[in-house]
Structure formats: structure tokens, C-alpha cells
Image 1 (cartoon, helix red, strand yellow):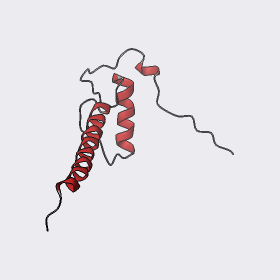
Image 2: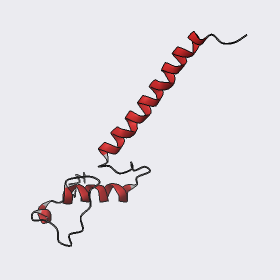
Image 3: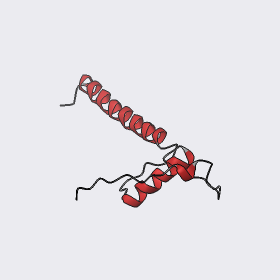
Length: 86
């Protein structure tokens, strides 16, 4: 006994919607990362370099080949003030 073709319509809709959401997620990730592949397994070094790139270029994924930092970078300090109780 064969499967009626009416049962394939909802199956096709589900498969198409999974495809649409997968492609949509891929597009959003690519757009958020300036057209580059998404980073994964970032450690502290990677996060610090991303913060530095953000301060230098204005983008987390942007990199600069300019050997000199832009004006104002010397006062753009990433260090956080730590409050300790003694």
C-alpha cells in the first residue's frame, strides 16, 4: 500500500521551513561578522584582540594594516578599574 500524496505536502512544508531557517541563520551570522565565518571557541586572548580591533577600527572583525594607531587611541584604555576591599 502506497503513501497518499496528501501526506507528502506537510512533510515538504516542514523540510522547506527547516531549510529557510538554516539559510536565514547562516545569513544573519555572516552579516553580523562582516561577511566572514563566525568565530567559535573564543578564549580570553581572542576576546581581548576583538576588543582591540573594535577600538582600532570600530568593528569586532575589522583589522587594520596601518602601523600607527589612530589619534585618540592612546587615551582609549581598555583596562577596567578593580575595586578591592582591604
